[in-house]
Length: 89
Picture 1 (cartoon, rainbow, N blue to C red):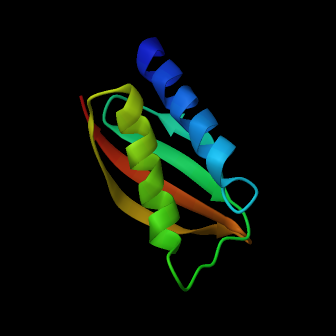
Picture 2: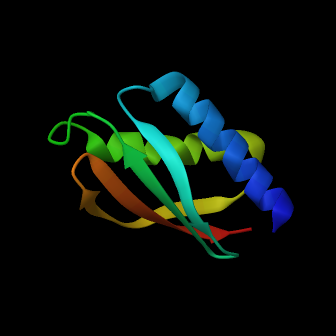
């Protein structure tokens, strides 16, 4: 699990490097089969918010061969979207 967490944190770092300040990812919880991230920012919610959430998948796949997909997302707080990803290693 520790190595997976390290990979996820590296992917978050890269994601934030290229997408901040419009969107910034933060790890909320990680388990063997689920990853939960908060995305905070001023990204356009009507024209491509899903793209920002899906972009994290591509960042993670740069570091690990994983099957990952978005299972749900919702506005958690103003300007924060909580996203649940299903993981299969």
